[in-house]
Every structure is written in C-alpha cells, then in structure tokens.
Amino acid sequence: MVVGNSKSIGFITLVVGLAVILFWGANLYKICLLPFTGVTANAKIIGYKVSSNGARKVQKPSSAKRFASGRSPFFSFVAAKGDTVVSYSDAPQLFILFNYHIGDEVTIAYSHGAPNKAVIVNWREFPGILLMLAFGFLLLFVGKDYLFK
Image (tube, rainbow, N blue to C red; front, top):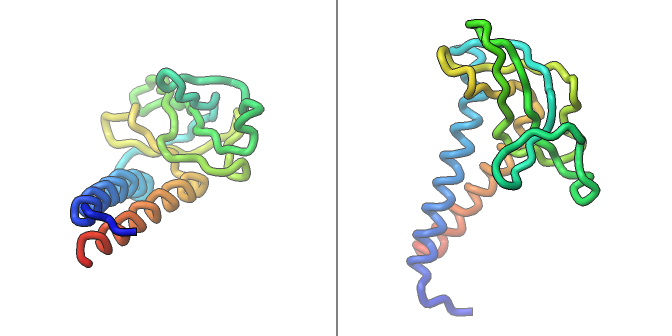
C-alpha cells in the first residue's frame, strides 16, 4: 500500500508519541519522586472512579460489562494541615489482578501545599503507566519510519 502523505503521517505520529511519553512519564516521575521530596501519608480506598460524564465515585466494584477490567480507586486521607482530602488515581488500572479493594490502606505522596494532587505510591500503579509509555515509544518508532524513509 502506498501512502501519499508519509511525511505528515510520520510527523503527527511523532508528536502524538512524544505527548504520550511526556504525559505518562510525568506521572511516573511524580510517583517515584514525591515520596522523597513531598509529604507521605496513609490513605484508605473508599470507592472507584467512573468516568462517564466526568469523574465520580461509586461504591460497587464493577459492572457486569467490565468485570475483568481494572478500576481506578478513590482514596481519602488526612493532610498535614488536618484537612480530609478525597482524590483518585490518575494511573490506568489494567487488570482485575491489580485492583484495589474498598478499605485497603495505601501510601500516598503529595507536594507541600498541594494535597489534592496526591498520587498513590504502590506497585499496582506501574503496569498501566509502563504500558502507556511502551505505546508512546512504539508511536515514536512508527513515526520515525514514516518520516525518515
């Protein structure tokens, strides 16, 4: 198959791949760096994120359609100033084996003065982020092949 716009396809694929790598790389960087430079606390899983019509919290583990899929957890913790903060994980949750359960205790970390941007510091956050980074690198390699034939 002959592609007439191989340079534009390659450029767009490179830009999208770079954006994916930068976005998910920043999330991985926060998970790895914030425990050392920010504030850590214990949090409790209080529900799961549903993304239809914006992010909202539900108490049921999953619907029948998405039984084996991952669930992004909502968590609650008390910040250093004494405020109770409720937030959710931005990392993609991939498989049912890596899911959190309501009532689980997790360690979170956040920047000084920004407890609403807390991240969960747990191994369960890494598979989804690493898969997205691999997808971004794949886009870079495909874009390079189209651009530099």
